[in-house]
Length: 140
Image 1 (cartoon, helix red, strand yellow):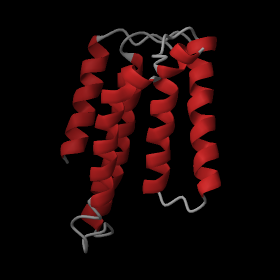
Image 2 (cartoon, helix red, strand yellow):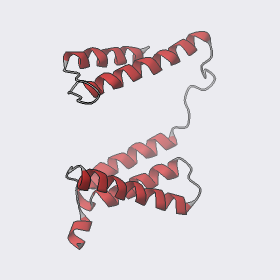
Image 3 (tube, rainbow, N blue to C red):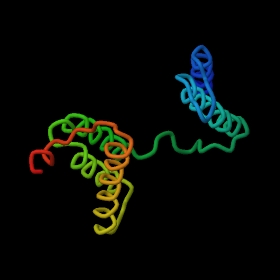
Image 4 (cartoon, rainbow, N blue to C red):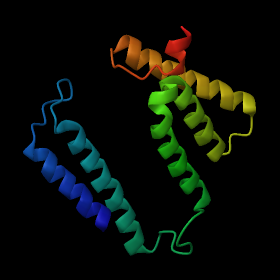
């Protein structure tokens, strides 16, 4: 129920901003879409809970993995400027893939490199978003 209320609040807040259109979004567009998604998905969960179809037998899942992910993200933010976007993102994505039980080390390394370098090329080179270069700019 709390997520339904949060989704509704986000929608109301987004409507106070300009929404624009899908081709020309304004400041309220993405919060509005996110609020609608949150409202719809949490409403589905709420209906399932009232029908008794929810997973009521397990109050909490495994806590170790989410805690490791949160710690990894805090470390990512702390080291991003110092070592740069590419290296920090390789390490974070490798950690996330390990948390998700990626068995093959080759898949883990390849996916981390492709994700990191690909997002760097997309945002820094193609879209002109300045990302921290870190250690790699000192080497080049």
